[in-house]
Length: 213
Image 1 (tube, rainbow, N blue to C red):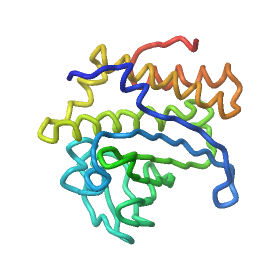
Image 2 (spheres, rainbow, N blue to C red; image 1 turned 135 degrees about the vertical axis):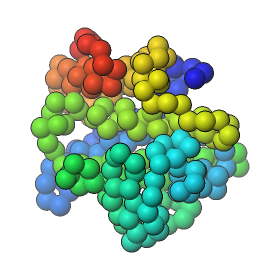
Image 3 (cartoon, helix red, strand yellow; image 1 turned 30 degrees about the vertical axis):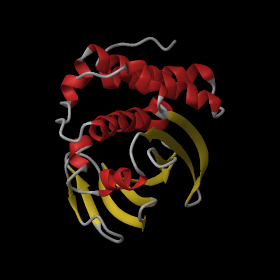
């Protein structure tokens, strides 16, 4: 698996916000990345059930408004909004917990398009322990997979375990985790607990102990 760690870390815009959802405190984690492809191709890559497994996870279901979906070994849910070729929204249901995902695709000139994904969840002990990186790091590896797929659609998807154990994979996971800690601080979180949460997230993804600094 050949990729530039720093280039891919720098390609992602990260933000964190606090809000109310259904009358309860919630947090939104947003990632955005621009790709060297057309608006229509990017929309197809992130909505076509035949292409999604090439960069993310195998998926089954009816990927239309009101339909349901299931990602293999991961979340399932319903399609709650669909406005081709610009936006869709889904529930993200895993482990008995319902959260929400909003995806937007926009053109940036004739040969570039931007993918933005926002994941919103009610405040929880899990957030206090791991912070935004618990969601952000996982989705960020998906954005890397999407970049590889768009660059070479025939390239096989990297094995997730091999990626996580490789030096470059660990470097990306570590860099992403730290960046999400800093995004939390930029959003108003206290620095020490935010960096400690980021360290726990990094340890989870890499299987290694990591300092909070």
